[in-house]
Image (cartoon, rainbow, N blue to C red; front, side, top):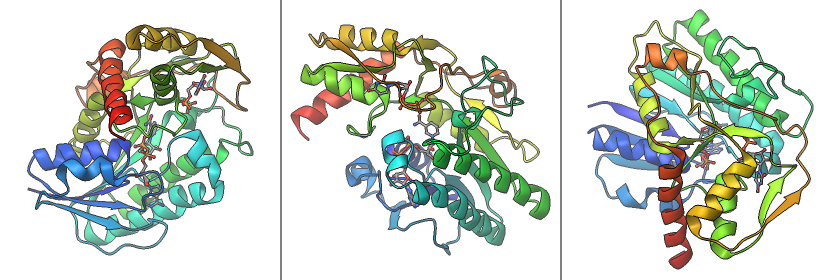
Length: 313
Ligand code: NAD
Ligand code: UDP
């Protein structure tokens, strides 16, 4: 049994990770400032005696004793991370310095939830880990993209300078139950719109692509990455390489919900990447991991979740 800290543990991915670690018999400390996280995400296991939750902003130092740290704290949807961009950068930069300092003091192994956004609007397709990216440093997405890039730098410098055991996961678009219904991400937006019979808002002409990974696969990837030998640091891409245009996703969701919603077109947000698809050869080799859940199956689970939420908010 290990003592494991999950920052951002009340969020979408963090809460599923806490649940999996508890199922494996570990003690889990969830640290969250509840900026986008919700109490309802952790209700299933809040009474588990191995689970503890602490309301805390990782921009401030934290003194706890743990064996492993998963650093997931950071708003992930453009609406939320752009609402208070300075806080977003602080969460990635000051937050990482604090959790890395903690890992150094207690000699914990630490995993960073990085992102495919470090590749920006990529000129190479699919994106391998060796690609350095094409990122606007002064745009609306920069607080998130550059914050996460700086966090990666900090992780690697703590590794080189202080011999910290680090793991860096570059997460591609992930979806599933417990996504925030108002967070503006494409899967939750389209499902909520379809279930309410409202127009499906496609930004731009809908030809931009994304590769969608179901949360179960992603959480499995996190735990496998944490379990790799100490000489494996990443960065490693985690995501589903099946690529879809946003228009294809909209049609699939209309079909699966049986909705009568019509598609409407809205302006494409600034710096919206035109394509994104992970090269997951490294994850296959180092983690023996590849996603198993097909988009259609994952969407059905997610639609069921949002249906229940609509009936019993
Ligand atoms: P989320 O918004 O549901 O979860 C983030 C959690 O972090 C929330 O519970 C929030 O309250 C908490 N948080 C934010 N700032 C904090 C702070 N300063 N101190 C403490 N807690 C704080 O998002 P998610 O989709 O679960 O993403 C989790 C992590 O994975 C994030 O770091 C995100 O950047 C990364 N990621 C997610 C995706 C995705 O598609 N879901 C893709 C790439 C990267
Ligand atoms: N998108 C859209 N309609 C929406 C929400 C998003 O067409 O209601 C598009 C968005 O412009 C982007 C893609 O869907 O091209 C994925 O957006 P999301 O915010 O989910 O993730 P990210 O852009 O960070 O990959």
